[in-house]
Length: 369
Image (cartoon, rainbow, N blue to C red; front, side, top):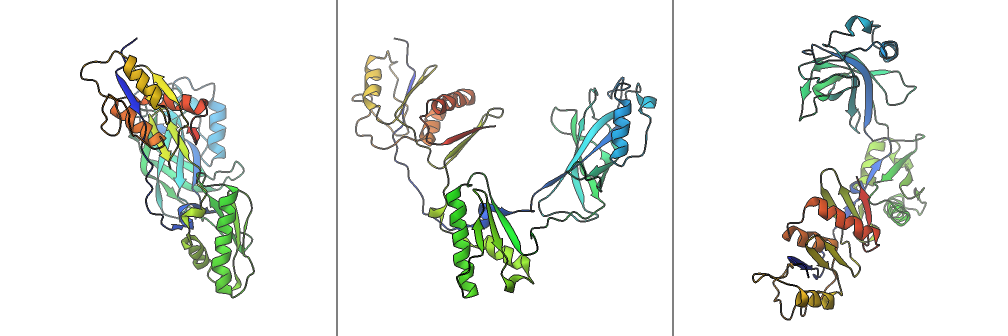
C-alpha cells in the first residue's frame, strides 16, 4: 500500500457563543439607498508611444459615442497613428448615500483599444452620465493624471478625479408614504422576511396604541413598511427607528453558506457547516468524516507509516488504539483546520469542497465566485 503521510479525523463538538440581538440594519438596507455607477467614454493623452494604433475602423463609432456622452466633437483620424492617445471607458461609483454638486470621487479608467499601457497618461475632460441607457444627464466631469496600480497597465485610477456637477440623491420614500426594506442575499428567505415584518408590526403598533399592521413581506427579499401619520413630518427619523429595531437572532433564518473564490483561493464559511459521513482521499491525504472511526482505524493498521507518524487531528491522540473516545460531529471548520495542519494547498482545499458539494455531503449552499 502506498505511504499515507497524513490522516485527519474530524471529531469536535461545535461550540456556539451567546446569542445577541441583531439590528434590522445589519441584514437589511433601504430601497433607493444603493451605489450608482456613472460612466463615460474618454481619451487619455500624453502616452509615451504606448497608446492606440490604427483606430480608423472605429473612428466613426467612437466619435459619435463621445458626442452622445456630452463630449465635444473630435476627429480621431488626426491622432490615429500618433500612439500617444488611447480610447478609454471611465466610471465612478457614487456611494449609497448619494452625492452633492461639488463633491469629488475616485474614477477608474480602462483601455478599450489596443494601447499597450496607460501609464504616464492624463485623462482628458470626460462627461459621466447616469446608469440608465436613456439617461443622458451629465452628473460628473472626470479628468486628471492616471495612477497605475499593480501590474494591469490598462486599468488605472484617477484619485478624486470625478467632480459632481449635479446633485444625485438617494431617495428612500416610495409613493410619499412608505419605505421598502431589502434583505441582504445571505439572509433572504420567506421565513426571515415574514418574521421581520412581524417584529416591526409588534414594535410600532405598540407606539400607535393600536394593532393596525404597517409592515408586510412582499417576497423573500422585500418588506414594505407604511410610514405612520405621526412620522410623516420626519421620515428620516422613522427610517432610523425601523433600522435600529432589534431582532431576536433566533428568528433569523440564516442558511449556512460556503463562498469560494477560486481566483484568490479564499474560502469563507458562515455558521457551522456540517458534513455527512464521508471519507476523502486527496493526493497523500486521507480525511475521515463523522462515524468513520472504524475505517480510520483499519487504514492506520494497514498503512505503512513512518516511525515519526502521528495522526493529524485537532487534539493529541495516540495511534494505538486509534481515535478512541472521540465524540462529536465533524463540520467544515474542522475540515479546513485539519487541512491547514496538513499544509494542503488552497487549490486542493477548493477541489475537496467541490467534490463534497457534488456528492451532497455538505449541509450548505456553496457559492463559487
